Length: 374
Ligand code: NAD
Image 1 (cartoon, rainbow, N blue to C red):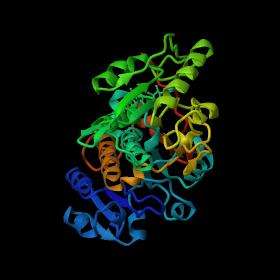
Image 2: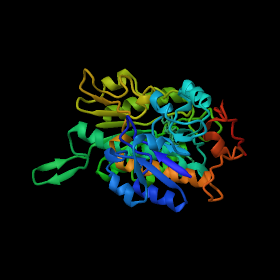
Image 3: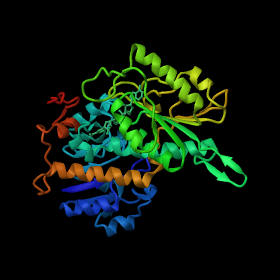
Image 4: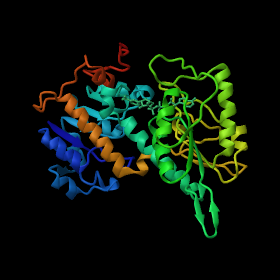
């Protein structure tokens, strides 16, 4: 199969790395990569050529059997895809009905890498987990830079410096990465999640798990977070106010699949935080967990709290983000070429493949039928 990797117009990430080219070649595929496509992620054309890719002009990378991308194609890029081409990219299907119509009208088979079902079997393809992990790490790096103090404590001849206090809300993939990073820099870390089962993971990383003295019953049956209601919501609000006021850095990562981000920290709580303290709201792109967050911006409140609403945290680590993304793609291609004969088949009876298929044979195929929970 001929696989094309065009240059991205917006993100510094690239959908293949020299290592992933080697893996794709081993699977029997040929790879055409647009000249300069890996430059902003730190990979040169010579690196790709050495790994066995053919470096071509951008048009050449689009005229292939399968096109690998990071961002969704824009209008001009859509025009470069011939009918029948397969496309794998992040397509945000829930927010992009017009794009899905366009993909179907052009008779493209499109797989959304950001629609991988959240089941363990699909973990090796899950770009959202890969990116969340990097975002959690980078959130701490950004927070440390904006904070302007040390994260680790010190005892020196000139006196004692206490460690910074970091409070992490949401201990999923991003939150656990943030906890691990802040711990490794020596901060004193506390964390809260509505899912009580994460307490053990938080503790195993050396952080303190904050719990409510009331059940945080979830309204979902699939093990993921639901919204807090009634007394649990009131107890949580009190806890957030207490924890945020005592923290130097607050990192929020709370998301509820399929819904806008829950608003957890209100303006009153932010107003009670110390001047110089920093909030990083990783939910900024989904509406934010914190009052005052502006997606993509840094806001400094009247009381001197810096709120970072960066929505491009993985792109601030373009080399590693591309490496994880490209590996997720190799795993996808292995799944779609079960006979190792270069022929790509989407098995619609498989929940993972069906879940990602958003356009096929001239029709929009998203949302997929719900996965039966056994
Ligand atoms: P997520 O990004 O949807 O949410 C982040 C965290 O926010 C979650 O831990 C959630 O419980 C928490 N949260 C939601 N509302 C909250 C609130 N009001 N207060 C505090 N916390 C709140 O979740 P995620 O990071 O993608 O993953 C969550 C879990 O799912 C993890 O255990 C992860 O390992 C698992 N997961 C599995 C797969 C897979 O199997 N393919 C993929 C992704 C995640």
